[in-house]
Length: 347
Ligand code: SAM
Ligand code: SF4
Figure 1 (cartoon, rainbow, N blue to C red):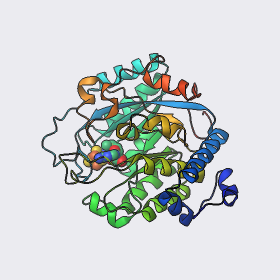
Figure 2 (cartoon, helix red, strand yellow):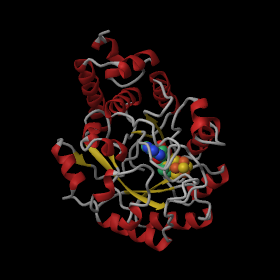
Figure 3 (cartoon, helix red, strand yellow):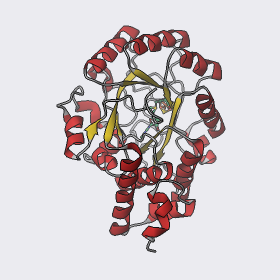
């Protein structure tokens, strides 16, 4: 059924879109409707967050994990992974290089690796802050007290995807974990004053259009600052090895609808979108995304942080203004943002 453009005059401004509308868009095959959805999301992006693309330098500092998520190549049951931990001095060195390249935010990401003591991570965060960089953490579920310590040490942002808003699907994909606890963690992060990011995967086995629409509605309710959406990509050494990967079309629709729903959030063009399609990130930037995450993990480790196979960043060189991602940004008529890219303006 055709979607009346004017029906979404609300959405044109950014703002509420109904769950039913979202489902219809997710299932829509008519090219002209999908093209106009993407164009609308691009206009909302332009109006609310402008043409700048924020760069967040990603350091994947440990691939040890005590969790056993069925979808992830780093799950603890995957004995084939060669595990590594970066030393603080190595991580700090990469931060210095990132700063020299003009990057303003460092994202420290890892599996849930209990070997790093929170007290030591706090010291690292404080040292990185002294370089004048914003620090985003993406290290999984911790206690309220631990999130608080890291916040007091200077961490600015935290990424914790809820992965799927369907509690049954969540429990089946993350053994021993609950959606309720994930959402509790997000509310703690919010309360502690972190810029809070969440997100989900599209194309998970057992996921429906209705469930993705619920995810997008939940983004709207959670008042998030950052929202990461990527396609599920099966890893050969996980129980989901034989599952089908998520499609680019579905992830682009989810990004576009999320932009329309949330207006001014920071939305990355994810590496996973770039992995399933060589132009995936560029297409995501054209339908709502405004962030790129150049991978700064040193090459020997980058290959070992294999949450899914053939990550597109494996062979991308160090980020520099002349490099691939910068050319992509220029090619689509956008600019590299020179500010810190906080959702509510620089602090
Ligand atoms: N361990 C932390 C956590 O789970 O929040 C942070 C690192 S984890 C590798 C970062 C994200 O990778 C997850 O939130 C999940 O959405 C994504 N991911 C894991 N396995 C994936 C897969 N097979 N395909 C696509 N994305 C995946
Ligand atoms: Fe560990 Fe995160 Fe992978 Fe789950 S998604 S196995 S928590 S690294």
